[in-house]
Image 1 (cartoon, rainbow over the protein chains, first blue to last red):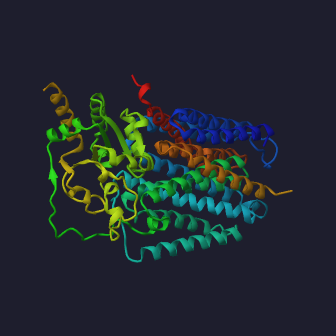
Image 2: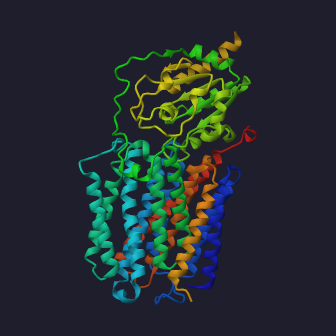
Image 3: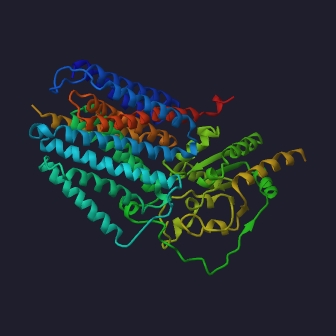
Length: 472
Length: 98
């Protein structure tokens, strides 16, 4: 490999680091994307010009151009429409798909290296290289099928609820232990080629079994964990190929996924092991079934007059809002209230949506200024001074039981303190409990008004009522 | 002299800590585009896929696997950077709007 290529790789790595650094603020984020893209193009060009010779050192030429060019063309032709046609609500599915693609690529490259190097196994598949190679392929294959399962759940092709069976964790653990055992055996005796397909098949199967028992509500965490695995498999590839650029880029992706999954776990007050092996949603609480509790409901007209009289409103959007496609109506409501001098902000829970930060993208797509999108820790102090908290399509993240009821499955989960607002309004289809099947005390408070209906339709009515009242 | 492996472990350690520090500072507003971006960046494995596919004496198996790998990661690169760009462009301040 030429020295020029190595210097190009150093620049690429620096651009990747800058790219992530510039994501710290929306104002510089565009620059971040351009830096990342430039780093990628440079790295690809550098690889072509400094291609290693047949002996692994010196300069050689790229062979098999037709294969490479065809692959680039297909990848581009598929990639461009995905980027532009994909609706923002489907971004989690796309992300899961791209984790699958990235992980598959790492696994296949590892597999190809394994067989290609067999004739020189004694020099080219030394123990350390084999350790990196089995890690690369293990993570690659299991992330590939795992991400496809996550995508299926997000796309609702697969059931969202956890798929469980008896001794599930024992079966999974046993399977993983066998795969790990084969991996160790391969690392010690790399010429046992017949073991490799079995190892790969077990990794693929393990990926499926790992994800199917995880419920739809945990997808934000799962996606982040898979992101981390995909990055680590690229990183392991860097060790196999002796490429520091791959090690750096893979480590950045791995640590990013790790941090996001920690944030998601904290936002749900759960541990990694609990998310992966807990089969949440299984927990059926039988509380509150006996008692018939009373609540107050209101019409759009009544709700509009309360909103109009308010001086500050905090809107709490949940994924139900996106399901109802109400984002743009919310934007109209925001405009309408802002024009009347009402201070409107949005309280965003970290797990609102189907992946980390998803709700912010959905709100930004509807042209809501990002300085009005306030994260949970910052907005919670504002609720006591807020006249109206309007909850749309969110449930568990507003449930005061998380603070008070030790027996509740969501106890300890950080929530938006909606119940501290002077008036609470909740747009909801009916009194049916939400995803986790937990009754929400918020709905039965004296200051809460339940607004029954489809989120989009109800917000439209609210908007209609507002100008009418001004005219009158 | 440290071996390649030792150097790489060193680089890995530094890059991981650097990554943890940088990502911690990313605004929660941008967590979704961040994940798209890191995913596109980790498609740097395209380098490995090109090396495998374009090597002199690559076996047919290597070429087929490498071909699939390049296709998959180029899809990630193209769609990843473009969709991230599409997302970050949506984030506007109030005064920037018409």
